[in-house]
Image (cartoon, rainbow, N blue to C red; front, side):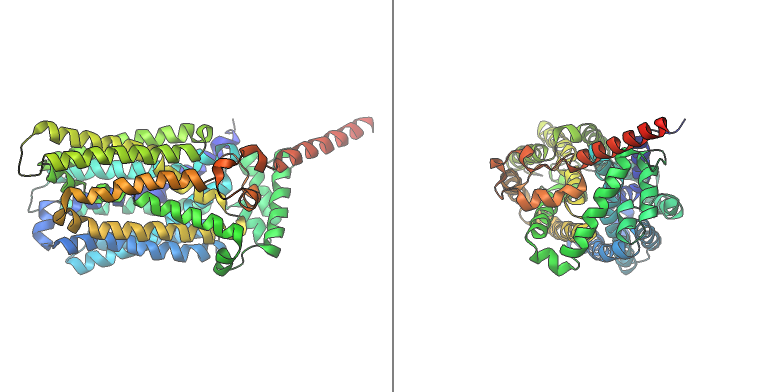
Length: 504
């Protein structure tokens, strides 16, 4: 029995999101690698050098996302995923065999190039394959698989930490080397999956685009009413975009509707990094150490935190197409703010080394778990969902590329300054994230319209006509229902043809 179309779309997207798994794994594994005794004894890195080991990866990812924008338009979504996976394999190999910090920096930068391309192109590819009714949960796979990668990294690193002696470099090399496996699987198999139908139609291959739409949505039936209506809407939208919309990066900044979407996507990606998530992910071991929690207990607690994050991301996949995008993002930032307030109070009242209060230590552990749940259920997935769905076909690859570059730029900033900041100013560093979570919530309450369940081809209408201060708008006022009207029209025509054939 053939799979239901939406399940087929979902499973194709699950495979593509192996690219997101690589990002999550690296985020998790490097925190444990730089804390392992063998690593610290071998490289004897200073705080700034440790920060560079982390940030050179996201610096490479910044440029990877930049290159993936034009590559995605020129070569297609699948080939861009292939290139990203192959580049990551090269970087992973250099990291695993690193003999000194220069090898490690090179491997981290090259792996970053691959990851940057993958996390930019994968949600875009997913959004262009998915039916509007499940687009949120499909693109939420980006964050879910990132969580799967972080979970795998946490437990694998914990195993290598306790399983190998301090004079054995497998304590960190093995966990770094394992990340090559999913990258190789992705590279080997991605070309067997369908190309984006929107990219095919946009590049003068409408027959292939129609065939792919039918494969994705109707078991290959090219006469299905929804497939025909969607095909016509995509063709008309692309024709309009070719004549009027952005054909270069410059026009993303000069066209009012395009710039509004670009500004929101970039603001969203920057805001997510300023929730404090990268500070916790990269330097969790250091942060736990500030509360007097040391040794392999820190890795165990971080692994438990990864399980909690995965549960939260799974809940997001289940409910995000029902709750919409706007209010989960707002409440998620407010929840993050509350957890950082509590964490700051704990660090201020019970300074590291000055007290041995076990209750405070456990309180800090639990509050980081609660933060991780709040972030992973809301802000994390939405930072990939919204940019992937707000742009037109003609601008999507360029716009998502710039938004992803913004994410990695802020990620690099936080990765570089967190270690010295935690050493120099301690708990006061958390004031930054308390303030940013509050301002994030207020900003998106004011400017972010609801985008859930709209066809991608209707986003231009929404961002051209909706007011800039969105609390005054009503969602129904800015929906065209064009796709539904097209489906009904196609069904009427097909019914008329069937009636005539019966008479004949």
